[in-house]
Length: 172
Image 1: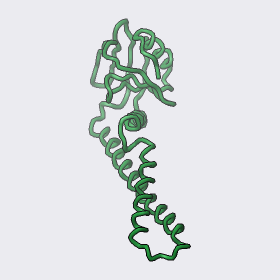
Image 2: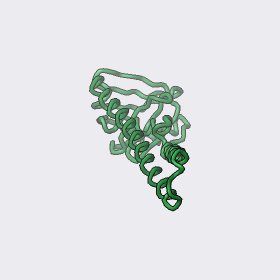
Image 3: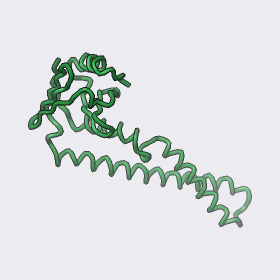
């Protein structure tokens, strides 16, 4: 079975965002909870330093300090994430052979990938896992490298089903 598709920058970015969310602390949603805890600790520490504040306004001051500090922490997190993603996006222009027209053929014991300048044969026992997102299938060769197939590709569902059956790897 053979499928043809075009791999775009958006497809690669989708893979990297998924990969970073699974493997990088900075891209996990729990980072915002930790940011809230840090902001709370900073707000309480700041209030201890300024104990001469009128008692009725202490709660409001702590809340406002917390809100401002949390906004700053979240802003820093988004800035770091954005810079990282922009650098990843720029790396595709350095190595344009990653993107473009791809041909993926499913054989008895291997996958054959043809692109503009490269032909690769990948044995089934090399495959680590198969996962999917809303718009893509990912065939992992190791923890950080995957073959990306857009779900809009004709017969992509059928190829993944046959590959999963042949390799006995569950699609997750």
